Structure formats: structure tokens, C-alpha cells
Amino acid sequence: MANPIIEDIKLKVRSGNPITRLIIINAAVFLFVSILAILSFLTGNSIFAVTLENFVKENISLSLNVQGLIHKPWTLITYMFTHYGVGHIFWNMISLYWFGQILSSYTSEKKIIPLYLLGGIAGALVTIVLIQFIPGFYAYTGGSMIGGSAGVTAIIIAAAVLVPNYRMNLLFIGSVKLIYVAMVVIFLDVLNLASSDNIGGNIAHLGGALMGYLFIVQYKKGNDWSLWLNRFFDWIKGLFKKSPKSKMKVAYKRSVSDEEYNYNKKVTQEQIDLILDKISKSGYESLTKSEKDILFKASK
Image (tube, rainbow, N blue to C red; front, side, top):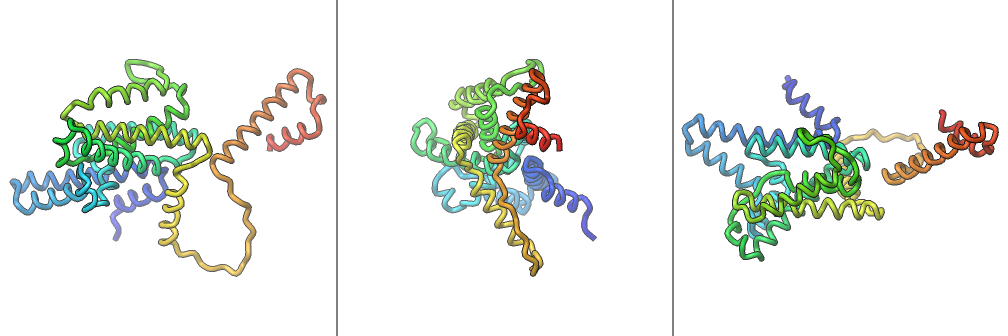
């Protein structure tokens, strides 16, 4: 009999929105790593428990050197879903939830996971490159990095670039424009570059921020960098779906992209606003036949 908790988690991952899926995956990895650490502690740091814990950590965290990345390329993805501390995962996930909701409401939910991944990859590559070439960072070449901060920062900056005047209500501060929140995030990361506490993380944040900025700049130009990743995800899903063959032929209308849909919606709303304004000034009879048709269709 299947475990109801496991089945419920599977259902949430399959049917939940992208933000929920990212949070669940991060939480699951965090619990797995934490359980290994607890087992090591309870067994008195037995050789087997410690070896298992170290093996897992070494194979999911990102090495801050080119050789490590070449030998373990999968860590370019796994590191951004790995957290070791409760505070670390809590603030990353709460930020992902807040800013992910804002970004998805002004674009679409299908932008969240691709941008999280692209931000995490950009943060990792920028960190590795800078550590190789900047003398002050040489000491961190043999280190490793974990955390979803780069991906989350990409989402924060993307939201701020897209809707800079959006206001957030912050505790003890009040209403603040999103662009100012983003500026503070970047300022703190730059300020902490010389900090030995989390040098890799701070550089990765800046790499993620750069990706978030470029992502929205290109999005505004009509270049959606999330399309190829979403197509890849759809292809993967298709491998696990068995659809029965049907002899019936059905004609489908061409589906529109998120950008086309949002544009058409905006144009229609602007037309309706102009028509309603005309009614308020000159009455319903002043409308042309096409204007009446538009209003009638909108009422449906």
C-alpha cells in the first residue's frame, strides 16, 4: 500500500504551481541531508554514517573550480536545491514565494522554474570564473557551494526590472517600491564581497542578478529565454505519457504565446475603456456598430 504522505507530495509536485514545486524539491533535499546528519550524530559519528553523509554532500554541492565541475557536471544543478541550515532554506524559500508570485502574475508561471535554473547556473559559472582570475578569491578555489540564492536573486531582480514601481509592504518599514528592494539586495551582496563567511554565495548572487536583468530585458524585446527549457520539460513529460491513438481527426486552433495573450488582453481592455468613456460623455447611441459589437462580446 502506498504511503499517503508520499502520494500527497507527488500530487503536489505534479499539480502544484512552479513555485510550490521548487519549494517542495528544496525542502525534500534539505530533509534528506538533515536526516543523514542526524544519523551521523546519533551513531556517534560512526565511519559508515559519516562516509555516507560526506559522499552525498560531495556529490550534490558545487566545487568552486573548473576540474570539479568537469568531473561532476550534475552539481551545476543539484547545488541550487541543497541547503544545510534552517535559516538558509527558510529565507530562500520565503523570498522565492514572495517574488515568484509577483513575477508570475505579470508574465506567467512557466517563467519561474526556467529563470530559477538559469539564475543558478549563471551564479555558479560567474563564481567559478571570478575565483580563478581574481587574486583575492584564489583561496576559495578548493571550496564548494550550495544554496538556491542565485536562482532566487534572479527572480527578485527580474520582478524589479519588469515592475519597478510595484509596492511591497515590509515589516517595520511599510510600503516600498520593488526597485528599491532589489537595489538593497545588490548593495548588500557587493558590500559582502570581501566577507570570508560566504564569498561564493555573494558572487553567485550577483551572477543570478545579472541573469534576472538580462532575462527581462530580452523578454521585453520579445525574446523569451524560458521557451527552450519549457519545451525540453514538455518533451520529458511526453516520454512518460502514453496517449491512446485515435482515428478521429480533430482540427486545432494555433495556441497563442503568453506574450500574445497578454497583448491581446491589454488591447481589448483599452478599447473597452475608450468605449465606456465615450458612453459616459455622449451616451450609448453615439457608439458605432463595431464599438457596440466589441462591447457586446466583452459582456459575454
